[in-house]
Length: 401
Ligand code: GLY
Image (cartoon, rainbow, N blue to C red; front, side, top):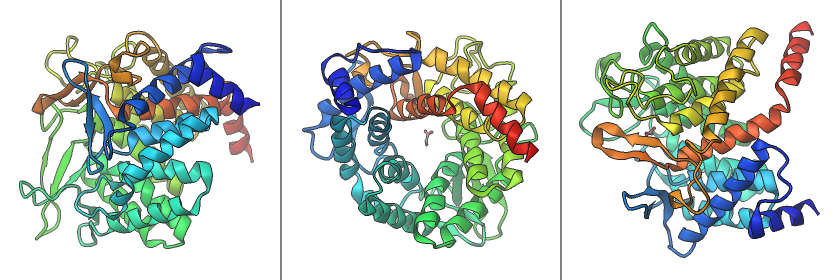
């Protein structure tokens, strides 16, 4: 009955039975993302990426680092709605990137495979998805250098051994692969990468640089740089978001207190930052010279929001309340007309106003698949938290026992 109701809601109008703002946004997202899916359904091998300056859809092949996000968004929407048409769409786009499980020439395999097949397996328990996840972890592990203790991000000869803060996000795939296969080598690589990144990527104030180029021959760091941020010493907003999400996730996976302490330090850098705007959606770089005229990055806002919601479940009451208040403002902002697209506009992506690669003048103030993915994740996390009071009470019960 529930399935039928959602099928009618999404396929016909998606307007009825809206009970609250989160459900209203999720139902809009389902309708919009199904329309996005329909626009690539017959484009063999293509995946949504963004829109061009005329508003036309831009697609990518499966090798692009974002190829798994729309499948992941569809899996989240299937989780919410149990609607068969969303499941079929999620399966179709997941299938398009299946061969990425064998990629060994870049680190983004975690983004590609975990966001798609990770959710597919979580929601269906289908063993064929489990095989893809473990194969992908094996491929990613080939990029680990045991001497340096980190996974190489890019093969570009411009760097010796580059590791970008974004690479923290690929560790979730490795943690899951150990759980699924019993092979602890994946988890050990993830812990080594997180420990080494904590040592070399971060500044005393808790912010992270983007790229650390390790000295392959002598060990240690050759140089620290930016690639997508304003400058080598600036705090690129999405880099801070990846860092926050990465260490929160690694605490969930390992329960190592050092990761929680580090996640809190990163979170406090972000949420206490004097240049974080009132709606808590960051400028694309915390040090962009044209603040307050600088562009916002909705993708960084969505990633930070999702991470803060999880982090709030691990911290004491005072911090939980602080993080939930910020995450609540972010959800409100992203669910409002300033960021949320109107139906059948924005190339059928959900959120507007993200920044991909500012220094390259690429994907500036556009919709991006990962903004939608982490926004959906945040909305579902809000629903799972049930209500903030209950979660905080649970925390208090936990520390009492
Ligand atoms: N390289 C991933 C990002 O643009 O955040």
